[in-house]
Image (cartoon, rainbow, N blue to C red; front, side, top):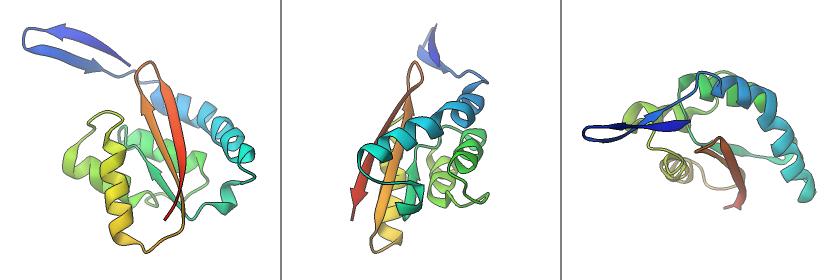
Length: 123
């Protein structure tokens, strides 16, 4: 991920390798994060993920051993608002909180320079 300077401002440039990076690298990062908290994927009730794009959402579903379409809030947010950078996950979180009464959620987001951030939410 990077930026090009255009006449009217900055234009984001995404690598086509992002879905591959997600499939190959995110799971081990998430597993390590969860292990530090004494948790595993089976302890997560819902995944709240930044929708970097349709192929990225597919890669996240693969990564978390979900069925295609399980990240419904990410897909709806991408469809309705597009990818607004890593902050887009807050729109996904809002939809998830409105749709479901509670549970343990893993929030993940991707950002510039291919950074990954996550946090646990018990709500």
